[in-house]
Length: 184
Image (cartoon, rainbow, N blue to C red):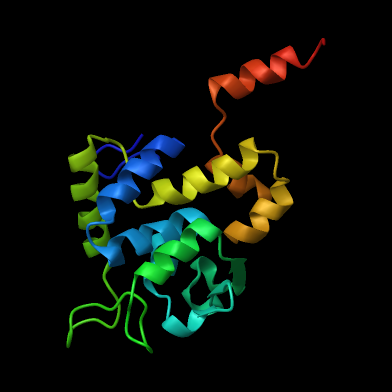
């Protein structure tokens, strides 16, 4: 768990994600930003660098130039729940989806996103959460729901399965289920 910026980002439960997104809904931009992180499993930096033109016909495109390692462009189908956040949020027609301060930064800064999330966590009483929690949570949910690692790798953009597997959390219930599957 994260403590003062150190350690691994907390993997959230669905109830915790819902509580956070509900709190973030006070500002449509903020809810949309973190909904993108959760429903696509992307990094906060990838979401912050989205352009309005990166969202077309039910697909979000994370351009190679904005991904970690700049290795590959990823296209992710928009989850129906995410579509609602995108419809609610009304950015400018062109340019940055999450613009920064006029005259300073083209995009909302990572520090601003961190502050937004920290305030929301304080309001709902969650600790150990970071912007990376949404990514770890999404990827862990996919894994626990039986999605093959290769498919999760395609969504997450991890270059190798070993790195991806470090993201995935195994719950005590999953361990128990695995043990019980030995002899039915």
